[in-house]
Image 1 (spheres, rainbow, N blue to C red):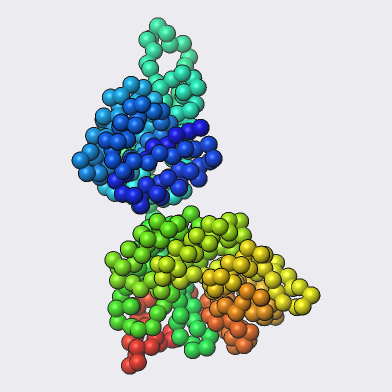
Image 2 (cartoon, helix red, strand yellow; image 1 turned 90 degrees about the horizontal axis):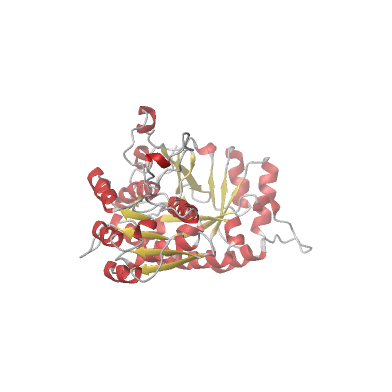
Length: 406
């Protein structure tokens, strides 16, 4: 059993870090503390395998907490990862001097958090099994060193200030684009899919959220009709705590929650229906829109003897309860796309809004509308637009409606 201790004065952060830590595996036990002094008292009498601490805390900040902890017996054997919103070399050097081993910047990337925590645990366990200090293995006298010494594993200290080749230091800026969706009944713009470097942008990407809010806020400030900006959402990113944080960010940016559409993957809903329910409930409470990307399941959905299309039971129940829009791709021949649209329209969990993607031929739009598809997106509407050009597509109209792009 590995014990991870989390120290952060904000309860929301502790909840998020605890869930991420527990996702490492069933053998992980988490203890969290809002007061660094209480954490130090507990650590004085109990074992920890990894400590994750915030930097900016009242009374005792992260540096002082690590310094006091390292003064305890056997504390050098425990790796410490510090989380901070600051990105300053002086801070990192001071934290390293206090005894920190690794760093993450807030808001944390969930995948990076799990990987770094898992690696620190594995390295600490490996060094412990050799009877060595995982942070500072004791140096041997020259007389004890063999003539040829095997390479040693690097200490778990982040090489944050190491020199890198110029090509690595100058990272290529992300290419942000928006692929428009049109309402097939009115012909007006109904939404926009956020793309990063040509791929669907994700809710877990803080820069993607900022790009969407930065584009949505000025449009909402001068128009009445909603435009739903779509981000992909993994179940790990839609916990109740994350939904609360997202609601606060929307309020701060002045964007109505209904302007944001978070899209789940159907495969994730089927694999983890309980987590999908919790995520949908949290998003509904926050007022955020919800859609489901059927992916390959759209083609796999068969028909029963009555001729009604049915999806897997977990997905069927999810759609019946939360009524999300269903997104499916029309990459095949036109007749195949229409058959798929009609089958989904007869799905017993419907009627729900349907969104057709990958539309390359404008001739498909009218038949899709007759099949019950509400919105469509694809190359027939032109290439995705850069954020700076997005507002130019929506000149104000007399009634506040949105003008359809040419």
